[in-house]
Each structure stands twice: as C-alpha cells, then as structure tokens.
Amino acid sequence: MIRIRATDLYLEMPIYGGRSRSLKHALFKRAIGATARPPTARVGGIIEAESAGKVVVKALSGVSFTLNDGDRVGLVGHNGAGKTTLLRVIAGILEPIAGELEVLGSVTPMFNLTDGMDTEATGYENIWIRGQILGCNRAFIDRCVDDIVEFCELGDFLHMPIRTYSSGMLVRLGFAVATALRPQILVMDEMIGAGDAAFYERARIRLTQFIETAGIMVVASHSPAIISTWCNKAMWLSHGQLAGFGPVDEVMASYARASS
Image 1 (cartoon, helix red, strand yellow):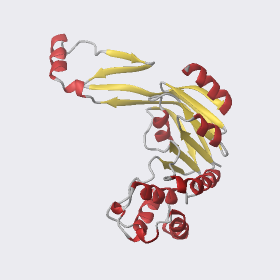
Image 2 (cartoon, helix red, strand yellow):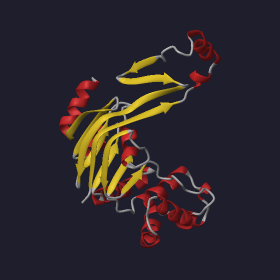
Image 3 (spheres, helix red, strand yellow):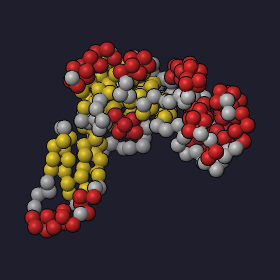
Image 4 (cartoon, helix red, strand yellow):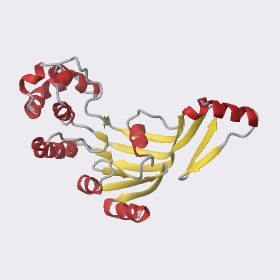
C-alpha cells in the first residue's frame, strides 16, 4: 500500500537576519530594556515573532490531508505559502514540530536534477553518483545505464568531466538519470526541465511515462497548465494553511477567484 496521511502538521522556521546584528537594533533593544516584550508582526496571516535575535515564521499551520495510490496532486499558492516546505516535510528533509505524518512507500524527491553531482567526475561516473543519491542500488543503476546513455545522447562526452558540459548537456544527463527511476512517491518543486527545444518532445514523452509509474505524485507549480495536464487533484496553500483540496478544476477556480 502506498499512502501519505498528514494530521495537523505544524512547522515553524527560525530566520536569523541582519536586523538582529545591526548597531541600530542593538541600541534599540538596550533602550527598551531586556524585559520588554519582543516585537511581533503579522504578515499575511503568518505570525512572526522576534526573540533572541531571530524571527520565527509559521511555515505550516494545522495542515491535514490523505493521498492514496494514483493521486497526482498539484500544490498551488503564492510565493511563501508553504508549498516547498510541505514537499520537504513529505520527503523527510524537514520535521514538523507538531502533528503526525504517515508515509507508506519510498519517497523520491526531485528538487534539482544535478544535486550531488561531482563536476570533476565524468558523465558515466555521475550516473552512478546521482543514482545512489536518489536511493537506487547498484544492480538497478547497472540495468538503467544503457537506457540513460541512449536517451541523453551525449556520446563521447560521457567520458569527460561534467565541468566541460554546457548547461543544456548537464540538464539532459540529469533528466535522463532522474526519469530512469520507478518512484513510489514522487515529489517535485516545479516540473522537471527538459533542456533545449530539439530535446523537448522526447523529454515530454519520457516524463509522461515516468510520472505514470509513480504511485503518488506531488508537484508544486505556478503554472495552471501544468497542474491541469499532470494532476487529478490540487491542494491550495495560503500562509501555511490548507485553503482548498480536491478536484483540480474546483480548487483552481477558487484559487483564481481569491487571487483576482
């Protein structure tokens, strides 16, 4: 069984800024005294409280949902709404301070196609490096190498250090490795890029096949077209809270009305 169940998730993010280290702010704190109440501000519904030189932001507040096998969920919301934070909680990168998160199935995070690659290593070596970072065992990577090599079409460049690659070549290699996986739970911050125009159509077909193999997909995007094309559900986050969750058309319509 593949499932994600979140119950009343809360997450606070401390932010240490230059204001706490400035001379002006130090003089202000001395003037008001150490026992004065720390200033607070409400920014779009998110409480920010300054204490001991840091600002605490409520990144998630009481978020609850259940995702089952076959769900393709698009996360929508303004910048800072909590979309990336929620993806990182699902991936196990961030831990909520309260609430429960049950994840049944292995999670494959796709936040950057080239995370962990070694610029001094060859393309072939980076296939192994990137595959292991994504949680693949040696036997699986060995089965996928020929497919990755054929798809990225980098030829003899695969024997060269990737520091010699153009940005487009690097994206093609990272894309080929990432989409060779068979994820149970796939989380992406924006849709995976496909590189140059000549590569796009082959990449689009491969990406479709890749997504179809996932049991659950959760993707954050600002593009209504991407959400409508790839997802059967949408989740609207607003200031760290769940403002809507359900069929794509219904949620996107509510989000559009609120944003207009």
